[in-house]
Every structure is written in C-alpha cells, then in structure tokens.
Image 1 (cartoon, helix red, strand yellow):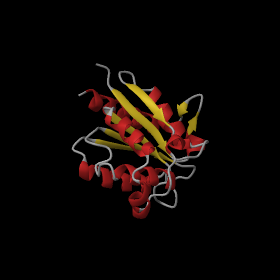
Image 2 (cartoon, rainbow, N blue to C red; image 1 turned 180 degrees about the vertical axis):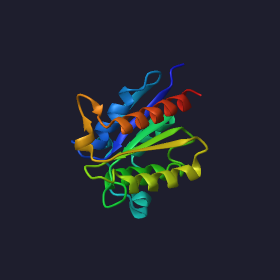
Image 3 (cartoon, helix red, strand yellow; image 1 turned 90 degrees about the horizontal axis):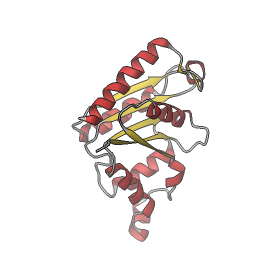
Image 4 (tube, rainbow, N blue to C red; image 1 turned 60 degrees about the horizontal axis):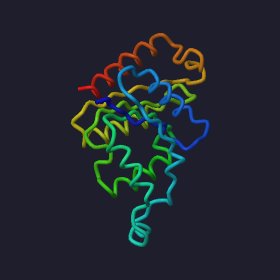
Length: 180
C-alpha cells in the first residue's frame, strides 16, 4: 500500500513562500504520495469556548482532522508572524484540538520554515517542535531556509549548496520514517 503525507504552508497568504516550500519539498519525495492542503479551504470563525458551546465544532475542522488521520506523515512549512504561528494556522489548530488534543497523532513530521529575513522562521519552528514532540513518539525533523528570495528560485529550488544538501538529507530521512 502506498504511503501518503499531508503537506501545507501554515499561512493563508495566496503568495505564501511557506506554501511554495512545502510544495517544493513534497514534489521531491520519491516513494510516497502527497496531498498539498491550502489553509484557505479551512477558514473558520475565530475559536472561542463560547462559540464552541453555541455552535459546536465546525465541519471544516472535522474535514481537516480526517485528512490528518488518513495520512502517514506530515510536512508543514510555518510562516512566522511576530515570532509565532500565523493566526490562520493557529485558529485551525485550536478548532481541531477540540476534536482530539493530539492533533497530529503519532506520525513522522518534517517541520520547516522560511522567511525573507536571515533568521528563517526559527522561532516558530522551535515553538512547533517543542509543542508537538511532547505528544509524538515519532521523529520530528526541522529545517529552516533563511533569506528565501536569495536562496530559493522556482527554476533551481534551494540554491545555497549547504542548505540544499541539509534539506535533502532531512527530506530523505523523513521519507524513510514515513515508509517504516
């Protein structure tokens, strides 16, 4: 049976560089299938306990969770907004966590981040890894691509040789983890 991963850029921007990176990484997987999600397809009201009590959990949260449940691994590229998750991602995460607190299940994960700046989203990446590894026995790999517009192009992908080597080492390790 073919293994499948879910991939997405954790942003609702139509020009998200993190969605670009997630798509790029997914297409480089050789032995697993992928589904690239767009967070805009899962836009829901801002989470609140009052709203949940009044209306229940939105159907889109259940659909997102079902996609996760039907996958063998997760590849997420985080946009960093003021050192943290984007509001669009955090809202989906908050709603889905009301279905099951362990949103991602026990799946191999490849967490990435990129930004136009030299720090490459490392703050949100560290936050995500620290949070998700508490509930996940599988390996969680991380990769940061700083200075996206200087170190990535549509034609060549990751252009910095050292970063490209590190990226493919991690991507291959992630794929191996999914295939186990």
